[in-house]
Length: 234
Ligand code: HEM
Ligand code: HEM
Image 1 (cartoon, rainbow, N blue to C red):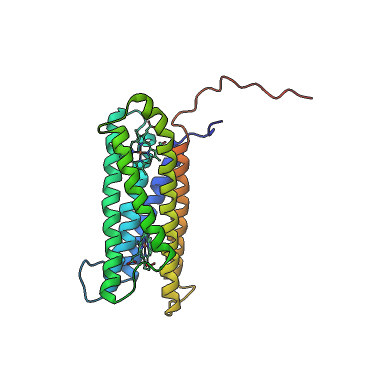
Image 2: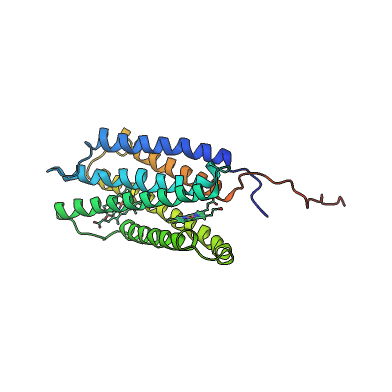
């Protein structure tokens, strides 16, 4: 039994939510948290690059890569495949930089590394993402497996790809929760504008992720249901 809904409306919703989440994380880090910096005596500005790069660079670009076959269903398959692999590669690079800035912030502030569930899931998710990319590249692009092998590997590629993607979403949710909890325990108003902004950003990310997953598993076109037979009465 396939999903009886078309993917297109979910891709529109996903794009709108991606834009909202991107604007919200930028407003948070720039307006409320003082801005972004590669080098600064205020180490918090270096940290701010972490959520921005992880959400916009890693999650949003990775989502667009996943949805590309549904967003451009009529395009040549080789072209969408190339866009898929390039967008995933950019997401992987920006995600790795995002993690680097979290480490840089910790090291320059004298804070321990890798002590939280968020950081463990984060290392796990980015490593699996890298492995998924290499396997995808070798199987579907260069040198490329035989058509039969590709056919049998594809469902695993999709399953594992969505698993890694959902893991990335969960990691980001823990990240928002952790940062807001740190801020609230050092005096941030629990019902203030910033707390609402962070929680709503995390909420938008959940809805965004759900629409990306549905867009990926729903078909681009609904086929006529040839085999439909109504359930007999009595
Ligand atoms: C999928 C996206 C994300 C991944 C893969 C990720 C990964 C990581 C990693 C590996 C660390 C550990 C750095 C170290 O130990 O020096 C870290 C730290 C941190 N991240 Fe993220 N992160 C993500 C998204 C976010 C988001 C959206 C936030 C929201 C603010 C966030 C907040 C934090 C905080 C507060 C820390 C420092 C505390 C800690 O190490 O747990 N992260 N992140
Ligand atoms: C971390 C990187 C990657 C992730 C998370 C990922 C994830 C996914 C997902 C979720 C789908 C299903 C999309 C849909 O049903 O609309 C998919 C399809 C596909 N991916 Fe990837 N992928 C990655 C890297 C790659 C790479 C490097 C290649 C190499 C070309 C590749 C080739 C393909 C192909 C050929 C399809 C099938 C498209 C179709 O339905 O005809 N992927 N990928």
